[in-house]
Image 1 (cartoon, rainbow, N blue to C red):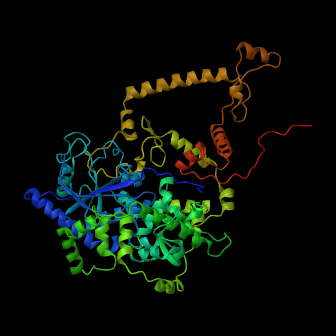
Image 2 (cartoon, rainbow, N blue to C red; image 1 turned 90 degrees about the vertical axis):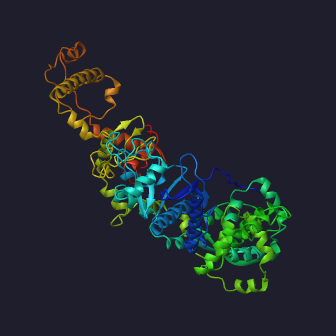
Length: 613
């Protein structure tokens, strides 16, 4: 029955913390009460964006977190965003806006990769900043990204600790020196570019498609459009045990199906479309032939119905209403509801956003079954709507060409070509010296135990927080006491010592002599002949009669033809690139890391040399 199966994996998670600027006059109970009121205000003020948003897995949420281990009490949230990275960046936008609307709040955000905001701005970071010393340095305050610098020497700056600050130290620094910890314009621009377009950008991430669904699911989605995410995930991460409930449907019978329009995120739609699945014959879900004009709608509806049935099957025959009762009778819920009414936010779905988005929320299956018991199900009305469905969105974005994908990646990285260049022009105008020059730049860069630094600034191995040379001091705040690791300039100053300079010259002379001797020994071997050389130079002294004897005895030497380093370098890289046959490999990965894009290989040479007859 099952042709392909998606295995469940550890999902990506983003955590966010909101702190109040320190105030010693507040006692712990008062501090807790203030934080709880802030949660209410934030969720109310941003409900118009958060409530209709379709989350991949978990919604944005906030709860009170008591102080522990030197970390003061604060507001905390955690969201599993799974395969949809846009959920994470939408949360970054929300956090940024919260600190803009509430300037007395300071926020920090991180995910499984750690300081992902620094990863996004890796090309513009100062040299001193790396994963080892970035702890508790990156925050949002007044709607701007802040980075607490490090002193060049311990004690050089009185208000900067010699080691990564604690949360309490960081909050005090931010509140006292807000103008000195503002991230550089290039770093802030890199992060702002990633969240540019919100909240309008949300609509661009949606996809509307026709689905042939049971009437119960149509009614549920009409009241809770966001539940489509839970159903898609249930189907996408299905296992044989979950599919047992879909052998014979008990909740969503196929006989009640009608055509409707469903709003997905593009990520959810792609997950549903690209899963090949054949339903159990006993389920009653039959698909028309692929040539049928509504085959896609039937297929999508069948998959989505399986997801909804799996969710409901996890609730058992009689689930408890205790969670719902406990929440709706709590003082926090009453206060929130009153705030919604006062601020005119009480619209369709906003009341339930709080109920089903908090820590006491029902499971998706429980929410679906509750809706089925409480909302009216007017099949005749749904059939009338079926006759006037809005058109589907075009899903050609699922089949991007390699050039279109490259363009999207460049736009995401903030790199846009001024004018489009045709494939033929790229091939005709391509300069192979770019390959050799980029490789030389790579060789000349710093190499440490952490890896090799690419010309673009990021580390090739082990570290993703590398600096770009011309931006290396972007967060040093123009203070000589702030941290800046040893650079090439420091080495140049050291080499101005006459004694050191003479010693260096002597070492280089000895090294050149040693290399010359090695060249002479290798000249008459197959290794020497394997390199392409420049134009041969005539021997300094040789006679016609005894040239071979002189070579053997060593009494006469010829001037060796120098190896053409650039030609050999480019030839070997191109040969390696060609052998990849368009697949990922070391040559293409290295070149792309250095910003070198080779044109397609149009020289289809035979893999073996033809034999002569």
